[in-house]
Amino acid sequence: MIISVASGKGGTGKTTIAVSLALSILEEEVQFLDCDVEEPNASIFLKPRIKEVVPVSIPVPRIDQEKCDFCGKCAEVCAYHALAVLPQEVLVFPHLCHGCGGCNLLCPRGAITEVGREIGTMEIGRSNGMDFIQGRLNVGEAMPTPLIRAVREEAKKRRNPAAVTVIDASPGTSCPVVEAVKGSDFCILVTEPTPFGLNDLALAVEVLRKLGIPLGVVINRSGMGNDKVDFYCQENHIPILLRIPFDREIAVLYSQGIPIVQRKKEYMEKFRGMMNRIQESLLI
Amino acid sequence: MKIGVTSRGDNLDSEVDPRFGRCKYFMVVDPDTLEFEAIENFSLEATSGAGVQSGQLVATKGVEIVLTGNIGPNAFQVLQAAGIKVVTGVAGKVKEAIEKYKRGEFEPTESSNVNSKFGMSGKEE
Image 1 (cartoon, each protein chain N blue to C red):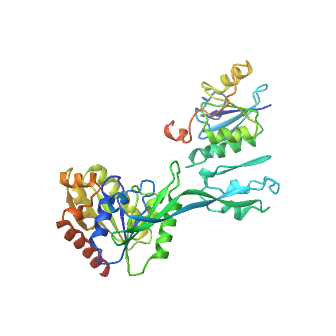
Image 2 (cartoon, helix red, strand yellow):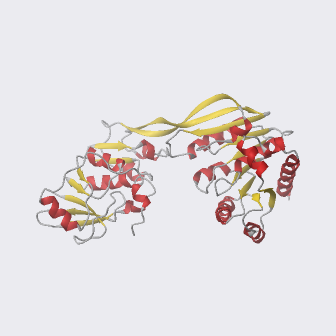
Image 3 (cartoon, helix red, strand yellow):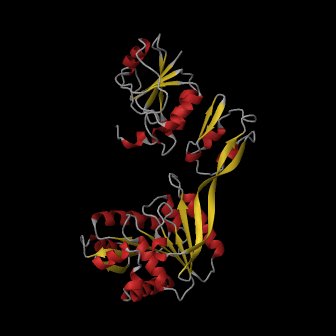
């Protein structure tokens, strides 16, 4: 089973929830993926022992100026305008290239070869008896999606089909989030009871419904703000799986890099209960 | 010779568009006869690479110099490779810019003057 944790709004507590969920179900075989590759921080809480660091590259075009006749087909097909074909020269802008390979496919002169450009690394290890993989995008790099894809593929290769995979996604609702949650059996959306939390929650729900992924909501910092998230969930038939109060002690644990379930044992049961509820909802 | 001017509209009385990659129109103007061609810039809506695409478009129009407000690094690199000079900081009407150019008031720049994505920040329209 694959459970992803996303949010829409940033800073609502995705990592808090993902980490505690994973630690509460250790009687199962668990694989933890930190797919928030622009800012992977689950390792602060899980303290994994990293055994392998694998560079991840995307293919970018290299032009053989001898073979090229400047027909311009490569620039025409490039949706990201990573190529400029001038009368006597072709310029490549590797940082704009998404590595789709379209230019190479369409070049009538075979003047394009693909060379790897490193965008980040995958760090693979173990933590608390779990398999742990995180992506880490290189600083200054604008394209997290291919790295997230690489992490998902690596995880799939290593995964025992009976294992539970917990995926910590990035905030937002664009490509990186889609890549991180894609193919999951269930997605937990973490929100806070504020207008910002609700606005971005509704966007995330739209994305997940389009992807056909069953979902439920965790309300973090419950007790602050207003009850509009509750109304929204009720109206849209979304289960509220768990509420975590707006509590100083929880904030202090977070600031010290300590997962809630390790210090506040009553949460062990709450997270297990949430997992049971998710599993039951998927059986219906 | 021909001059390229980034423009908010499709005639010589239009204001110079302060953005290169995401300008509304490219005006390709003959400074002697003031004959011109107004080319609508479809890169305006591009999510990325507007500067590269605009630079390539201008390079195919045979202009020798571009007058604009601001230009980013990618567009500048394309124009430089194509041997096109760039003047930044140009404002006012397109025809005024052409006159100033003819009076020799402009000095081509040696580098881009804004970062990538500059043209996406301002809602000019």
